[in-house]
Image (cartoon, rainbow, N blue to C red; front, side, top):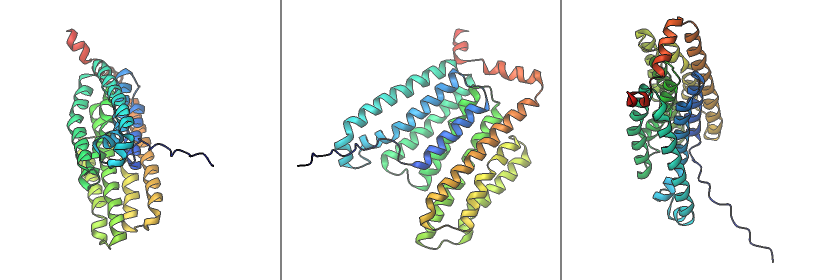
Length: 289
């Protein structure tokens, strides 16, 4: 008699493959925009811990089915507790050493993160609103990281805007491509998101409220999404669509890192010193005073 082979345990890693790129590419970009330190690394570890806690939480809540909760509930609760403690601990360490602006940015992200979690608990994270909200929240992780490293506020917010714009356009185009495979969608609707995003980029560059390079950095993903919207691929090619968008996101990251470092290299020494001194003012210093 052949011995019984146990099935491999259910993976508790996040199942939304696109979300990996939406978190890790902006996160790595933010770390590369400045010089990593205790605060920026702490925020990064906290964000990654919360990201990997998402799937165990869904299993515990029963969103993956009663069978998954019955078979993997205990393991999911243990992993959720470990990742939750790691997220809180690293977040507190980051908060104690982060500049005030970075701390404010991190706190401002919490309501959005909680709303994303609430949608997940309700099983509505796959809606257009849920996916767009998650994209903005994941991209927003880079803001406190960049601010912790002394990156200026316009560049930190501009990078977040570029990522959010690129991810939202890509998400809406992919949804349109999938819908088009089921029932024809007029090209005007498929191309609406890329067209509006291009107009928005032009408007931002015209107002000069944010560094123009931030708006321009989103161009690679917008152009790729525009091509897929104009010439929708077959459903069998969706994996190729995902990899193409992921590759274009790397170009967005390279453009942002190159832009901020070029900006800092052309900045007067006195202004650079002022920015660095402001970045070193932490919440801990204020408490001591």
